[in-house]
Image 1 (cartoon, rainbow, N blue to C red):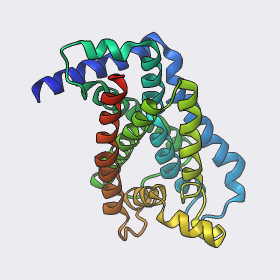
Image 2: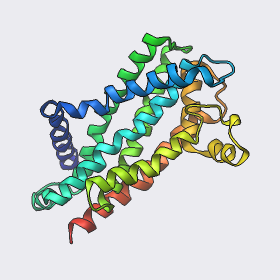
Image 3: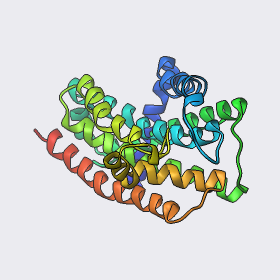
Length: 254
Protein backbone atom coordinates (compact mmCIF):
# COMPACT_ATOMS: atom_id res chain seq x y z
CA UNK A 1 0.00 0.00 0.00
CA UNK A 2 2.82 2.41 0.85
CA UNK A 3 4.42 1.71 -2.52
CA UNK A 4 1.13 2.29 -4.33
CA UNK A 5 0.65 5.63 -2.57
CA UNK A 6 4.22 6.75 -3.28
CA UNK A 7 4.10 5.74 -6.94
CA UNK A 8 0.70 7.36 -7.36
CA UNK A 9 1.98 10.67 -6.00
CA UNK A 10 4.99 10.55 -8.35
CA UNK A 11 2.73 10.04 -11.39
CA UNK A 12 0.36 12.77 -10.19
CA UNK A 13 3.28 15.17 -9.82
CA UNK A 14 4.44 14.28 -13.34
CA UNK A 15 1.06 15.20 -14.77
CA UNK A 16 0.77 18.44 -12.84
CA UNK A 17 4.27 19.52 -13.86
CA UNK A 18 3.12 19.55 -17.48
CA UNK A 19 0.84 22.52 -16.84
CA UNK A 20 3.56 25.14 -16.15
CA UNK A 21 5.49 23.80 -19.13
CA UNK A 22 2.41 23.79 -21.38
CA UNK A 23 0.32 26.74 -20.13
CA UNK A 24 -2.09 26.34 -23.03
CA UNK A 25 -3.50 23.35 -21.12
CA UNK A 26 -4.92 25.85 -18.64
CA UNK A 27 -7.33 27.14 -21.30
CA UNK A 28 -9.57 24.10 -20.81
CA UNK A 29 -9.82 24.80 -17.07
CA UNK A 30 -10.06 28.59 -17.11
CA UNK A 31 -11.00 30.47 -20.28
CA UNK A 32 -13.37 27.90 -21.80
CA UNK A 33 -15.61 27.51 -18.69
CA UNK A 34 -15.82 31.28 -18.29
CA UNK A 35 -16.93 31.60 -21.92
CA UNK A 36 -19.71 29.06 -21.31
CA UNK A 37 -20.93 30.94 -18.24
CA UNK A 38 -21.02 34.32 -19.98
CA UNK A 39 -22.66 32.82 -23.08
CA UNK A 40 -25.49 31.19 -21.17
CA UNK A 41 -26.12 34.06 -18.75
CA UNK A 42 -26.06 36.93 -21.23
CA UNK A 43 -27.21 35.24 -24.45
CA UNK A 44 -29.62 32.48 -23.43
CA UNK A 45 -30.48 33.52 -19.88
CA UNK A 46 -33.16 36.01 -20.86
CA UNK A 47 -35.06 33.38 -22.83
CA UNK A 48 -35.03 30.65 -20.17
CA UNK A 49 -37.59 30.66 -17.35
CA UNK A 50 -36.36 29.36 -13.99
CA UNK A 51 -39.16 29.93 -11.45
CA UNK A 52 -37.83 30.69 -8.00
CA UNK A 53 -34.30 31.49 -9.17
CA UNK A 54 -32.36 34.14 -10.97
CA UNK A 55 -30.91 32.39 -14.00
CA UNK A 56 -27.32 32.97 -12.89
CA UNK A 57 -28.07 31.20 -9.58
CA UNK A 58 -29.78 28.37 -11.45
CA UNK A 59 -26.93 28.06 -13.94
CA UNK A 60 -23.74 28.10 -11.86
CA UNK A 61 -24.25 24.74 -10.07
CA UNK A 62 -25.21 23.11 -13.37
CA UNK A 63 -22.34 24.44 -15.43
CA UNK A 64 -19.82 23.59 -12.69
CA UNK A 65 -21.08 19.99 -12.63
CA UNK A 66 -20.80 19.81 -16.40
CA UNK A 67 -17.32 21.26 -16.42
CA UNK A 68 -16.01 19.05 -13.64
CA UNK A 69 -17.29 15.94 -15.42
CA UNK A 70 -15.35 16.94 -18.53
CA UNK A 71 -12.21 17.51 -16.42
CA UNK A 72 -11.28 13.86 -16.94
CA UNK A 73 -10.75 14.49 -20.65
CA UNK A 74 -7.11 15.27 -19.86
CA UNK A 75 -6.69 11.75 -18.48
CA UNK A 76 -8.25 10.12 -21.54
CA UNK A 77 -6.14 12.14 -23.97
CA UNK A 78 -2.95 11.67 -21.96
CA UNK A 79 -3.35 7.90 -21.62
CA UNK A 80 -4.14 7.48 -25.30
CA UNK A 81 -1.05 9.53 -26.16
CA UNK A 82 1.18 7.59 -23.74
CA UNK A 83 -0.02 4.29 -25.20
CA UNK A 84 0.71 5.40 -28.75
CA UNK A 85 4.18 6.63 -27.81
CA UNK A 86 5.06 3.46 -25.91
CA UNK A 87 5.44 5.26 -22.59
CA UNK A 88 3.06 2.86 -20.87
CA UNK A 89 5.36 -0.03 -21.80
CA UNK A 90 8.22 1.85 -20.14
CA UNK A 91 6.16 2.25 -16.98
CA UNK A 92 5.44 -1.47 -16.98
CA UNK A 93 9.14 -2.22 -17.06
CA UNK A 94 9.71 -0.21 -13.87
CA UNK A 95 9.38 -1.63 -10.34
CA UNK A 96 6.19 0.30 -9.61
CA UNK A 97 2.61 -0.47 -8.66
CA UNK A 98 0.54 -1.18 -11.77
CA UNK A 99 -2.46 0.83 -10.58
CA UNK A 100 -0.30 3.90 -9.87
CA UNK A 101 -0.30 5.12 -13.49
CA UNK A 102 -4.08 5.50 -13.59
CA UNK A 103 -4.44 6.51 -9.95
CA UNK A 104 -1.81 9.23 -10.38
CA UNK A 105 -3.59 10.68 -13.39
CA UNK A 106 -6.97 10.73 -11.67
CA UNK A 107 -5.48 12.31 -8.53
CA UNK A 108 -3.97 15.04 -10.71
CA UNK A 109 -7.45 15.68 -12.10
CA UNK A 110 -8.62 16.61 -8.60
CA UNK A 111 -6.16 19.51 -8.57
CA UNK A 112 -7.19 20.77 -12.01
CA UNK A 113 -10.88 20.32 -11.18
CA UNK A 114 -10.41 22.37 -8.02
CA UNK A 115 -8.89 25.17 -10.09
CA UNK A 116 -11.79 24.98 -12.55
CA UNK A 117 -14.41 25.17 -9.79
CA UNK A 118 -12.71 28.19 -8.22
CA UNK A 119 -12.52 30.01 -11.58
CA UNK A 120 -16.20 29.39 -12.28
CA UNK A 121 -17.25 30.41 -8.78
CA UNK A 122 -15.30 33.66 -8.95
CA UNK A 123 -16.85 34.37 -12.35
CA UNK A 124 -20.30 33.58 -11.01
CA UNK A 125 -19.89 35.82 -7.97
CA UNK A 126 -18.76 38.69 -10.20
CA UNK A 127 -21.85 38.44 -12.43
CA UNK A 128 -24.34 38.05 -9.58
CA UNK A 129 -24.34 34.49 -8.20
CA UNK A 130 -24.73 34.21 -4.43
CA UNK A 131 -24.81 31.36 -1.93
CA UNK A 132 -27.93 30.74 0.18
CA UNK A 133 -26.30 28.27 2.55
CA UNK A 134 -24.03 27.98 5.56
CA UNK A 135 -20.32 27.19 5.43
CA UNK A 136 -20.82 23.46 6.11
CA UNK A 137 -23.25 23.10 3.19
CA UNK A 138 -20.97 25.06 0.87
CA UNK A 139 -17.99 22.86 1.77
CA UNK A 140 -20.07 19.70 1.39
CA UNK A 141 -20.95 20.91 -2.10
CA UNK A 142 -17.24 21.20 -2.89
CA UNK A 143 -16.67 17.65 -1.66
CA UNK A 144 -19.52 16.37 -3.81
CA UNK A 145 -18.15 18.13 -6.89
CA UNK A 146 -14.67 16.66 -6.42
CA UNK A 147 -16.10 13.17 -5.80
CA UNK A 148 -18.23 13.33 -8.94
CA UNK A 149 -15.32 14.70 -10.98
CA UNK A 150 -13.06 11.95 -9.65
CA UNK A 151 -15.61 9.35 -10.72
CA UNK A 152 -15.61 10.73 -14.26
CA UNK A 153 -11.82 10.75 -14.28
CA UNK A 154 -11.97 6.95 -13.97
CA UNK A 155 -14.57 6.77 -16.74
CA UNK A 156 -12.27 8.77 -19.00
CA UNK A 157 -9.30 6.66 -17.90
CA UNK A 158 -11.11 3.59 -19.20
CA UNK A 159 -11.97 5.48 -22.38
CA UNK A 160 -8.31 6.34 -22.89
CA UNK A 161 -7.49 2.64 -22.66
CA UNK A 162 -9.98 1.46 -25.28
CA UNK A 163 -9.53 4.01 -28.08
CA UNK A 164 -6.86 3.99 -30.74
CA UNK A 165 -5.73 7.61 -30.58
CA UNK A 166 -6.11 10.87 -28.64
CA UNK A 167 -8.37 12.21 -31.39
CA UNK A 168 -10.69 9.21 -30.98
CA UNK A 169 -10.72 9.73 -27.20
CA UNK A 170 -11.75 13.34 -27.68
CA UNK A 171 -14.54 12.52 -30.13
CA UNK A 172 -15.92 9.50 -28.28
CA UNK A 173 -15.84 11.20 -24.91
CA UNK A 174 -17.65 14.25 -26.26
CA UNK A 175 -20.32 12.10 -27.92
CA UNK A 176 -20.84 10.02 -24.77
CA UNK A 177 -20.95 12.74 -22.12
CA UNK A 178 -22.09 15.96 -23.81
CA UNK A 179 -25.72 14.84 -24.46
CA UNK A 180 -26.05 13.67 -20.84
CA UNK A 181 -25.18 17.12 -19.54
CA UNK A 182 -27.77 18.83 -21.72
CA UNK A 183 -30.56 16.29 -21.13
CA UNK A 184 -30.51 17.16 -17.46
CA UNK A 185 -31.48 20.01 -15.15
CA UNK A 186 -28.10 21.69 -15.60
CA UNK A 187 -29.30 24.47 -17.92
CA UNK A 188 -33.11 24.33 -17.98
CA UNK A 189 -35.83 22.92 -15.69
CA UNK A 190 -36.64 19.38 -16.74
CA UNK A 191 -40.39 20.06 -16.79
CA UNK A 192 -39.82 22.24 -19.86
CA UNK A 193 -38.77 19.17 -21.88
CA UNK A 194 -40.97 16.73 -23.84
CA UNK A 195 -42.29 13.88 -21.69
CA UNK A 196 -39.77 11.24 -22.80
CA UNK A 197 -36.79 13.54 -22.34
CA UNK A 198 -38.14 14.73 -18.99
CA UNK A 199 -38.35 11.12 -17.76
CA UNK A 200 -34.76 10.44 -18.82
CA UNK A 201 -33.52 13.75 -17.43
CA UNK A 202 -35.08 13.07 -14.03
CA UNK A 203 -33.12 9.80 -13.62
CA UNK A 204 -29.95 11.15 -15.22
CA UNK A 205 -27.09 11.22 -12.66
CA UNK A 206 -26.22 14.71 -13.86
CA UNK A 207 -29.67 15.92 -12.81
CA UNK A 208 -29.30 14.27 -9.41
CA UNK A 209 -25.89 15.87 -8.81
CA UNK A 210 -26.97 19.29 -10.10
CA UNK A 211 -30.10 19.25 -7.94
CA UNK A 212 -27.98 18.20 -4.97
CA UNK A 213 -25.70 21.18 -5.58
CA UNK A 214 -28.69 23.51 -5.72
CA UNK A 215 -29.90 22.03 -2.45
CA UNK A 216 -26.53 22.57 -0.79
CA UNK A 217 -25.70 25.99 -2.24
CA UNK A 218 -29.10 27.58 -2.88
CA UNK A 219 -31.29 26.05 -0.19
CA UNK A 220 -33.53 24.17 -2.65
CA UNK A 221 -35.50 21.21 -1.24
CA UNK A 222 -32.99 18.41 -0.74
CA UNK A 223 -35.19 15.32 -1.04
CA UNK A 224 -32.97 12.34 -1.87
CA UNK A 225 -30.66 14.31 -4.11
CA UNK A 226 -27.67 14.86 -1.82
CA UNK A 227 -27.16 11.31 -0.64
CA UNK A 228 -28.17 10.03 -4.08
CA UNK A 229 -25.45 12.16 -5.69
CA UNK A 230 -22.80 10.76 -3.36
CA UNK A 231 -24.04 7.22 -4.03
CA UNK A 232 -23.80 7.79 -7.79
CA UNK A 233 -20.24 9.09 -7.39
CA UNK A 234 -19.08 6.12 -5.31
CA UNK A 235 -20.82 3.59 -7.55
CA UNK A 236 -19.18 5.04 -10.67
CA UNK A 237 -15.76 4.88 -8.99
CA UNK A 238 -16.38 1.31 -7.77
CA UNK A 239 -17.36 0.18 -11.27
CA UNK A 240 -14.99 2.08 -13.54
CA UNK A 241 -11.79 2.13 -11.47
CA UNK A 242 -11.40 -1.69 -11.50
CA UNK A 243 -12.40 -1.81 -15.18
CA UNK A 244 -9.82 0.83 -16.08
CA UNK A 245 -7.04 -0.89 -14.13
CA UNK A 246 -7.94 -4.25 -15.68
CA UNK A 247 -7.93 -2.74 -19.17
CA UNK A 248 -4.59 -1.08 -18.44
CA UNK A 249 -3.03 -4.40 -17.44
CA UNK A 250 -4.43 -6.41 -20.36
CA UNK A 251 -3.75 -3.78 -23.04
CA UNK A 252 -0.24 -3.07 -21.79
CA UNK A 253 0.54 -6.77 -21.79
CA UNK A 254 -0.05 -7.07 -25.55
